[in-house]
Image (cartoon, rainbow over all chains, first blue to last red):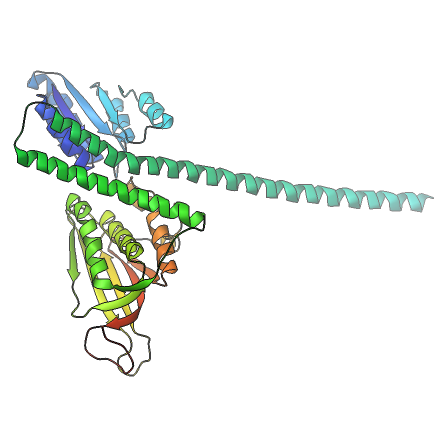
Length: 105
Length: 289
């Protein structure tokens, strides 16, 4: 399983990367929205060649471009990879915003 | 009779007009009050959301680090040490956020306890630098402190002073670009030469980050106020840090000021009345430690 992690907080990205790698996942990380978007497009294109399934872990509160915007753009570009939104906000509004954009969780 | 009737009608028309004007005025007042309440409610919600994020992030790190360390087989001791170090830093950050929130609550309840005493300023600055080291390292921001050749005694509440300097320094690191730099200087001013400017210690914390637009500069110490640029640069944060800093400064008799050039630099200055100093003799009557 390949995972693209888009998370700006170095501390959170750090333990998620270590934890996921320890579980045998292949992890790529982007630290902001625009970089995450570029990597997500590459990830979507190259995934069949990587011979596996993929998932995007996307932080909601990213600087410059929010996770919600990244999700919106990817869905508008018909990227169908599952997207799990990571949020420390936890409000109903944030969850609703994510689901409206077809995030998976 | 006809004249009397006309006069009464005119009077009625006047009363009606007055009434309509009063109703219109009160409606406008009511609309303003509703808009104010809606604005205040929106800010309250935003604040709760921001606080929630500020508390949850370090909590998530603490839990995540512990869970990752506990999974799988035994690891080298050094790895566990690194994990504990990160957990300690996240717990420290959590403690800082809680201390800030308590300061806000105590200020609102008029119960902020400030005990002034002579304090050596250099030590407080070094303590604040130490406390923000983790955050600076995360953003790869270099913090440079030009240590002065003299010790300066000021009046302050030691933990509140450390909190005040920490808040300003945290803000400078937060709004620096990744890999940027923050410079701290501590100067002894006044009392020299012809001017009779009172002797003071000025602590200046300068960053080279996003800067503050002139319109935002006026509101930078308002509670919960965050400019669009600030929110775009750092979506996290509560917007209460500088408001707390201003309260802590005023309660300790410290003048706080800010100057900024958008997209270039911001300097926050804290001016302390100098009690004593250990540098060269500057003027008669000033005690030296």
